[in-house]
Image (cartoon, rainbow, N blue to C red; front, side):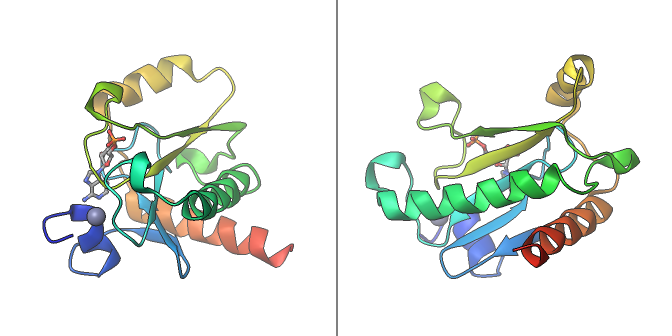
Length: 149
Ligand code: AMP
Ligand code: ZN
């Protein structure tokens, strides 16, 4: 779709810190991360909302999110080289549900035990001081997980 920023990331005309891609999906760091490592998984094909998203494609997005969430819990991704203790997967569908970019996507947010205060701070600041290093660590973590298969 011509004026969609996520389609522009897929076709390479907009910049993104891509951490994973395959024939069906692309995953990249959120530009305003709730926590360092916060990643978005999108289908290559433009679907504004869930209603047009083929379930098989949703399955492929979920599989990538699962893989990224696993990697975040197996190797250091966050600042301070922390390994996540858990992840949140979220999909906001519709303005009422806080969707702001109308190209369906899954958020993968790494979580640490007892991170409530830093999460609250992250929700306000939404900034990673060194996103290039975070992207490198996440790519390395994903390679490690792929190597174990
Ligand atoms: P949502 O509210 O679920 O629609 O989330 C949209 C997310 O996309 C937000 O967390 C934004 O920070 C993120 N975002 C918007 N534009 C870009 C971009 N060009 N690159 C990376 N992330 C983006
Ligand atoms: Zn799009």
